[in-house]
Length: 459
Ligand SMILES: NC(=O)c1ccc[n+]([C@@H]2O[C@H](COP(=O)([O-])OP(=O)(O)OC[C@H]3O[C@@H](n4cnc5c(N)ncnc54)[C@H](O)[C@@H]3O)[C@@H](O)[C@H]2O)c1
Image (tube, rainbow, N blue to C red; front, top):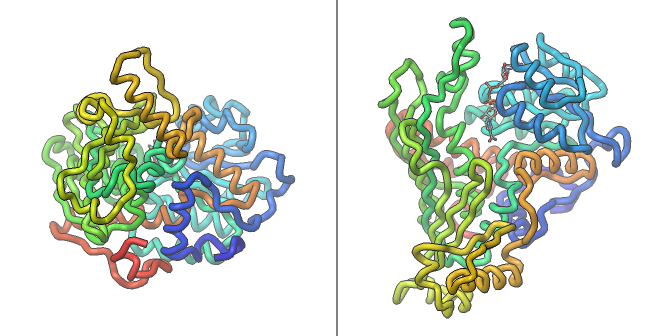
């Protein structure tokens, strides 16, 4: 594929290649500039943000620290949130409460952040792209299968526009380190991922006026929401696709509204199993009655385990090596395993208890035997170029900054349309499997330019 090819024409093979490029360290796909950034490369991108709710304000908090973008308008139909948003961004942008299309008509606005509820994403993306705006849209990108080709079609009409989805783990150096490590074979053969997002909260928001119930508590109603899979599972389903460098082939699961029983239409607990082309499995659960397990992904290879999470305030990623079982199939496959990890005297302790931190920064006051072993292992991983040392940037800030960089320098986002569409399929099919109580297979016909044969074999 030439660098000038529009992003939407990436097929499966090039998509996978891009993932590999990321895992070996180069993180951008440079291509011909899109619409030239109007006021020259150095000037900030002028943007509007539509939907100044909790995630919209999270973006504004981070955007207020960036010099590469300037907020011209905040748009929300709910003035209470609009006022809170003005405090976050601080630069006194104009406001729009009646109709987001008025924001899109503005000539000065080059880009929009769409941080509205799930059901509004696709109509707003389509309107924004028709108006010639670069788009950042929160996850999950599409709510129905029928919407997916509409966005591909819009992107093919506007290849010059950046379209990025808010799957921020793609922008976390902690996750990038972990993925690089997995793809370079250090975990051996990765067959299973366990992930969970467990909370002890009803997810309900207080409503000042019953008329606002469905607007404020949109997450509870199927017309507007994809439930726990769209809101929480989507992040981890994206990590699974990233780890396995593929979309799943099938998903099954059970969900129920068994605890809260408060009139919500969505499930309050979900347990799903995705199958991948080489028999790998991704297991995900979300519950609303217990937060002991909190949220994390546990990635299980035959040479070790990585437990990883963005955490509440601090990201965490720990590698627990394990010795290969006698006669394990990877020995025959000659997967390159670092021998250093085998001879480490502390391997047994590391395997069960301490583990090796693989995030960018880590220090320990402990100068004992195990700490020294951890130090050796970390140094080895750094020297091999597997762990990149540096400060972890807030991933929301990183994805926002990257969005502006793509606009200013004609790059394609890491969390691009292919990533967003694959992620949407994971959410839509899991919900279908639970609602219809059956195993849902991925369609084997051509998926938006993805070659079906590649669904069955590793490239
Ligand atoms: N990436 C993440 O980690 C993350 C975290 C939380 C939420 N999200 C996503 O962000 C999106 C928003 O979630 P939220 O929690 O901020 O919801 P929210 O309900 O807090 O905010 C949504 C806002 O959109 C406004 N809105 C609704 N209809 C509108 C319209 N027609 N025009 C303008 N404004 C309108 C609402 O008034 C509200 O202020 C969802 O897609 C959600 O999945 C992503």
